[in-house]
Length: 259
Image (cartoon, rainbow, N blue to C red; front, side):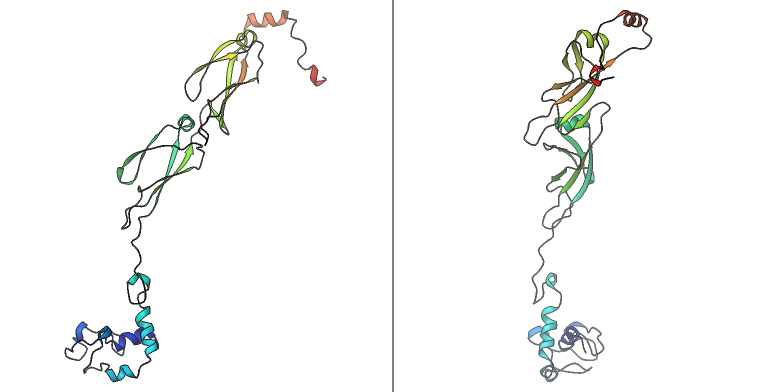
């Protein structure tokens, strides 16, 4: 036999000359029951072409012991290896779409895990698209304990808010009267509506800042909300048209362009 492992099993009496397994404790294979030998189960006695101690003495003991000590690998618990430690359960991946406002204010999200388990997930500061949240012990079971649940976050778009780093941008329509005269305008924010002071003489494109109304930063602070004023001029308003025809004030808004 050229294979060291097979030669070792042959001299132990586990297989015959053709590599076929024998019955344990010497039964079968053409011989009667034999008394168990010493190390590894060497068996004296005969019949059926069983190897004798004389056969073992003439064998290449290096090949025999190489087969004995290398069989099974580390996971088999054999002579030459250590038994592998119990395995931890596998991690399980999930995707979570978080509403825009919830992401800005870090509102807890209720998540249903495998098997129907429900858990409230705390969103971390500095949340962004692609942020991964690890829930220890919420993965697959294992002998060394369960694995983890890995939640990948995506932030859902909003119909009028836009994210700009840690800030939130909003285009706010205002009336012509509000633009000319100024006043208070109600403004939606991630924390609810607030009153914003519109300066008199405001034009479209003017940006006003609401401090601390943006996304929560990693340091625990908040970004701002940047409000861009958009003057809404109504179409077909006869009174406004008559006023505009008679109004001669305001100067030339394009003078700085040299045209």
